[in-house]
Image (tube, rainbow, N blue to C red; front, side, top):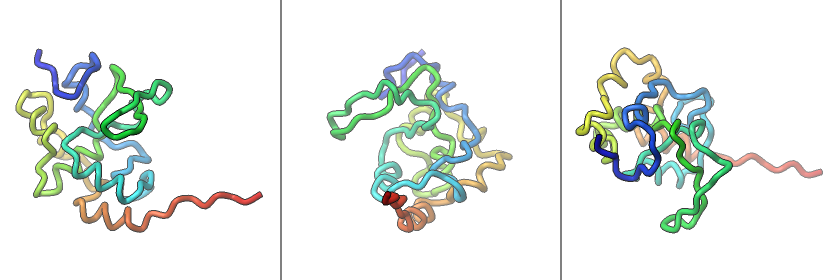
Length: 147
């Protein structure tokens, strides 16, 4: 079985793309998603990499990424691509999925029709990068309490 580029863990590639519903606090949800900084949102949407569901990563064993000069949560055999991310990539016509989603589709690991067809979660996710960017531009970090 061919391995997807950028995947060093031993998870089944088909399992990596089988999540259809974003979690309740997915950053790609229009309502109640985790607020993310506008620059981070831009980086995610312009990247050719996959964006993994935060609930399927290992935060206890972070790996240092020299390219981005930061620590990142580690993938596990249970890591999934974020369904909110995949839905947004499919809904934004200029994208039609990012490069990794297109490659995964060619290998038969990812099926955009199965993700989008009759999926009520589609309406809960931002319909475009512009819609997400507008919401992220309204981002305000939580104020620290002064004791």
